Length: 187
Image (cartoon, rainbow, N blue to C red; front, side):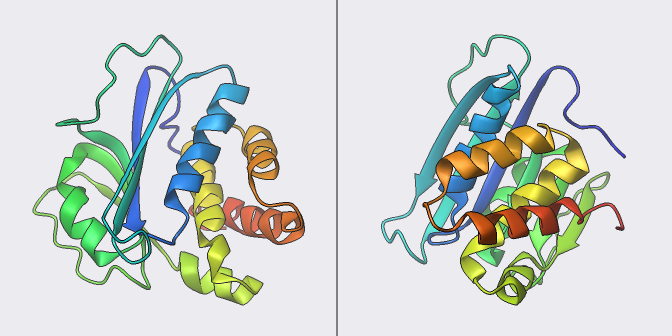
């Protein structure tokens, strides 16, 4: 397993279209990192149409103080793209040795023009639909991201999910998270 979470500062971009729960996912990831004693910077951006427009959540996780408070012009260690538009717009901001995770149901054309990037294709939305609600694709994605990178512990991610999601959806979200924990490592 490649541990992309050890040491230093890690920059993560979660991108797709509005309505996929990416801002919520960024918030959950940030909470999980804080529970693990890390410093966190989180910011988001979304287009004029909250559902269907582009959306991104950026998270910096660090074991040290974070002094730079802007995401502008930065390269990311990890990028998750849940739409083709997000891939087209943001994939070039991935570091050369970075990790790119895409929802293979929405991202079909993956021409990057860059070598040395690890690419992981996962059907997050399809998996969420099989669980009974496509709205938990973001939680499946978080489980997969943490399983692949160890950015935060599974326990802290689970705690952050349960602290953040709407009451009454705990069972579905825990199942989605557990499904995500089994992805990304050939399991």
